[in-house]
Image (cartoon, rainbow, N blue to C red; front, top):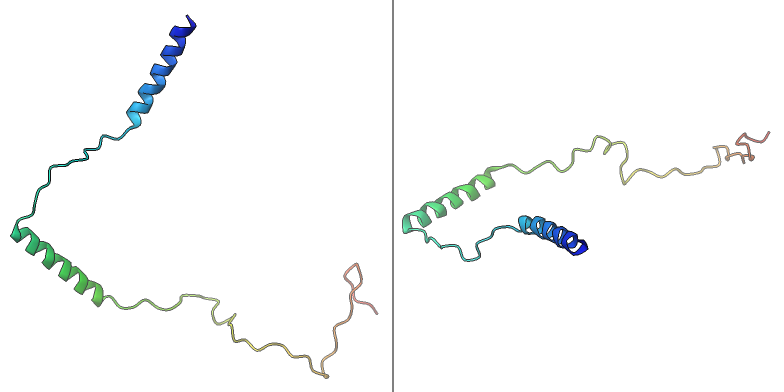
Length: 96
């Protein structure tokens, strides 16, 4: 009885695995194109490439924060006129 059950499980697993394999024809019957079809395809490709040349270039960036944070922003300089930062205590308040 165990052998019959094992055979049934194997058969079910093999059936589902077989169903998942694609049905691919490795040697399709090749159909060559006629000279008119080749000519029409070449003309279509040429028109397609010409239409791609007519598309304007995209804008460089659409970054709304580009003017706020720029790479060449001036760095803050510490001058003698500005007060130095006060050291903070562990609680985060400034020392008096």
